[in-house]
Length: 332
Image (tube, rainbow, N blue to C red):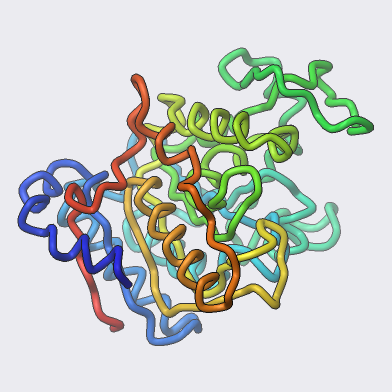
């Protein structure tokens, strides 16, 4: 792919800096397939490479807890792959976490159920293969009482939308679990196009996909980009988001972020970085490349979220190829 080729040609410029700045490192790991036996060694290689090159240890800290933020809003058709979740939880267990200290999470209980990460009945154990699963909308009414968890924006919900339990529809609720209760969290998005953001991937998962009452932004691209970048930059949330791992087992080039099988594509690749902007930038190139091959209009001009991600005091991460060190790992 052209953008990865450009990054590869830039290795000499970025190598010295990537050793000390995780946001300048991008790992491309090839998969042999999409089964558990394919993901397990590939994920271990990816995490070990990330730790070795950045000095960031994915091990228990003071709280001895970590989080895995899934993307499940597309239901079973377009959700974080289960073999990826199994591979990462296994790798974290090897690094010293206990099973009940690895929290699997996303914004909505209904979408987690549809994607198969929660059982059909709320009376059953709220877990996935023994790991606790938390949906933010279950706890949002209580969390809304804490000022640090309230994200206020003047955008109102669509007419007819249900009132929020905390009374102010201009307030979205941030996830206390990822802000206060874990040593770190890993972002596990899926990739699709999006009318509101252009690209619905790492930044969307970490922001709009991480709040309750965020649907109000989806009809307004300007406010969606602003909200996504601002939430990604919240210090307590950003500090603990140490890594994004994107599987391209299934991604969507048109009609996202809702699932549409006719526009789904697949590639045996994992992309991993502490920098969500480069993940989404490469995602944009993949979406546009597939659109061109299918005779569909590409996403152009470049969505404003990429400029907003590094404007003013906000620095989510560069998407300039010359700044990025690309490490390519073959399939195990």
